[in-house]
Length: 207
Image (cartoon, rainbow, N blue to C red; front, side, top):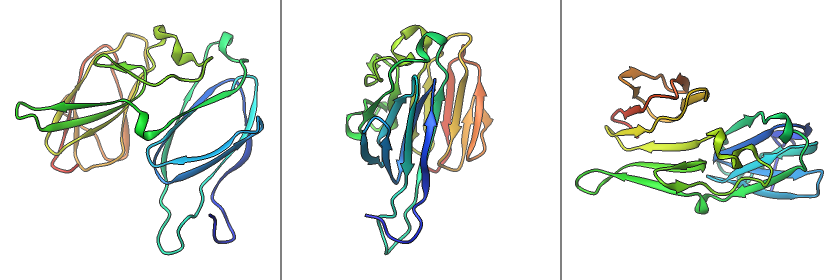
């Protein structure tokens, strides 16, 4: 399902000794790797790959439509595991969009104010799906939470505190106005925050 003379993406390249979590918000990814695995995912799906002792893979973005644009928006988070997890067998897990656990926050009128996808760890007693078997994320002591938070207009969400020593970042990628602890966060910017403090996240008048 390609068209045109050029296919965008990342042709075969090596990974070794770390983990990649590819969160596709819009668009399609075609994956193929040196273990013989291949597949297509996107539009809310997440691929979690433990590179271990080494894997070569490609991530290509098929141009599936001739009549309109083929937009692509994804985030790839890299985890640098400790030495004992560096040279494990490579493995990846697919977290399909429809199976990712979701929390809906509601106001006093039972209207949904926030939707939170739990990609890693747990939130409000709801657990994420299982990462690859040798992933660093399977050790609860590591506190590696990944959440995608969507707020309705003019709503507020409180993200519970983590623990000291965690590198915690909020990335704001869609909307118009966002405040964290009453500080304005520009669109398409990241903010490093204190992991030991509860965060009050307030949306503006645009979803």
